[in-house]
Amino acid sequence: MSEVKFANPAPLGLMGFGMTTVLLNLHNAGFFPLQSMLLSMGLFYGGVAQVIAGIMEFRKGNTFGTTAFTSYGLFWISLASLIVIPELGWVSPPAEIAMAAYLVMWGIFTAFMFVATLKLNRALQVVFLSLAVLFFLLAVAEFVAPIKVIAGYEGIFCGLSAMYAACALVLNEVYERTVLPI
View (cartoon, rainbow, N blue to C red):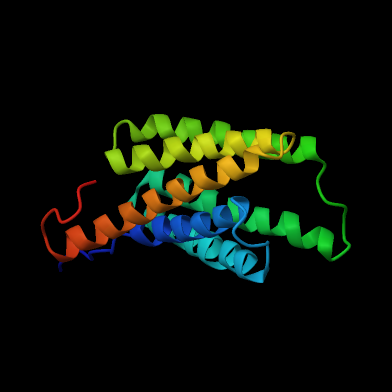
């Protein structure tokens, strides 16, 4: 009996992360207000799709992929919840210091994950380094509002880099050669 071959879930996770990150950071850069489109993308494509990709990475035995996709998927779900739950009147929104602490914790986690990418490909190194910088910029922006626009542009770069990595993985597999270097 032949061994079952599983698809690579990384492009799904990277694209879910990348597209959602670009859209959120277009908002942070001031291009449009926070609306249901962002929350829906955060919950479903950034959140649920990445959690699914993380579970699929678990099945493949990939600890890095499992940890990254599941964690960032749950990040998106928690971020959307931080916005929606106060709007429902269940609890008050987080204080600036609490939100900054939340973002710093994600920055520390991402910096740790960046170190792991040093044994992986350059595309993932760019994604994780730019994401760590983004989290720390967003933490500072809780107290220095103009930094949010800078973070927005940096976040657009981060999201586009994840989208590039996803596209490269798909195209390179489909064409069975390096179409886009990673």
